[in-house]
Image (cartoon, rainbow, N blue to C red; front, side, top):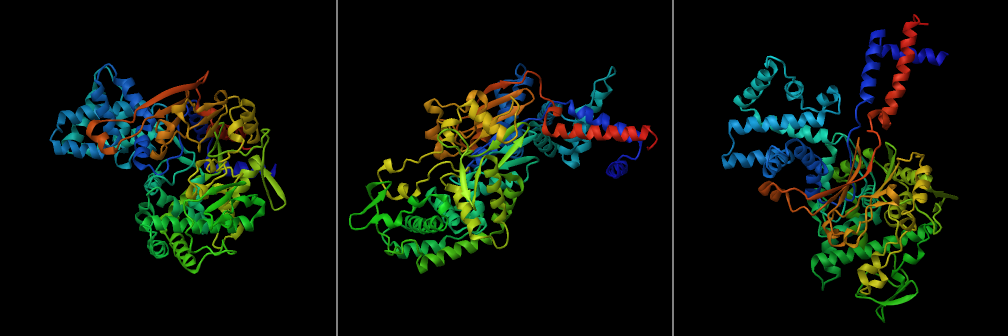
Length: 624
């Protein structure tokens, strides 16, 4: 009773009158009966900034669908494409049209009319309050008037509307207004964005992607193995640092390190040129950082026997006389055995020169302000997994054994499996952001990147073999049984229940593994219970997948998979009004339209309504 009095007192401070309570109950009831906003799912972006930017701008084709729906019969395909390109890149399109001398009062009037009509359509599922908050403050009043004018019998509202447009054009404010409307349309077309892992590596512009995401209005991130690698590197894990550097040299993406984050590779290149004189500077640097990496990995595996990765220590297995190496019981010829920094009997000890290089790199990673800002953002918005509106989102896998039961890792006298394992992994990942992280925690960040039973990796990574052995039979990476069992409805339901999701409408949204569309693979598995949305944003995957990425759209009508073809460039899009060619497949249609009241936020609003009803009864009873 005492707690209830305190609770009612706090509520009264916010709602000091009966009418204030009634007004809020009416408002919240109206909100929960609106259609749910559109969720947009993307995964495995891998630094491909231009393709990512375009998918963000076209909202996985949602904007084009709306334009075609509104004006399919009135406008030609070319005219509709021009409207879309303007919305995607308003500043660039306006600049080009000015240079071409094709802008006129008539063009501005027509364009503003189209944009206002489209903005009305995409704003229809939101409250006026939410739409106003999405508007640029300097145009808030005018846009609000234009979106909500109603025709009357004398045409006064129409005249009022036209006068506003004439004034905007007359005072040369049209460009700014077009930009504001375009940004509003894109913001309202997608209510919430999910990034299901792997922003970093392969492509060279993850830093630009993170800059873009930091400005986005509503999003969450589920960490991928490449993200956790950079998080470990930025927190001081030497093995993660070595792997990050190696990846970016391998994929010719060193600009993200040197230009993006101010991390100089000069000490590494100078050391490598001196150590491996017969190689070109970057080939030498790649070899040098690879050797450093394999030494550091050997040290981690030796320090952590619970990782059960002893066979991954490869350097002491090299037979220099015969130029071979023993791998999983077989002897393989090596392409290269010139390793002057490896000393017999001390194979995993860094040389003095290697220590100096590593210390320089570590200092640069820890003191790159832009990198640290981006990593802090990953921690703020990210997690190992997320439950959102009845769906379970994670990047890699939930480790299983061969029989399809939960499997995991034995740490500190306890075996972690299922949800508890992912919670434990997240705890360790967050703990390394202290000023003086434990070495064991930094080691675990490397394990999450590539460990045998890591939920972010899910495979036995064979970096050494792929680097030094030509015979690709040694490259085969054993994957976790999860990837065999996740085609089963029973397995998916087991995983969903483990995370507290029991609805028949719940799904697993998974990234990480490229869908080989060219070989007949489908992204929807287990009769729709699991959706894999890594179709291969990275150009390095296009030959493997046959396409350039899957995204997922979940709106009030159901779920749609969007398959995308490769994107040429923003320049081509501006020149020819070309879009990413996408095909859409509705794989689940809701029997009843999903409303805000059916979402996680809607459940909170319903709880708030119940509390307000109790406060209303308190007022009605005279404050008793």
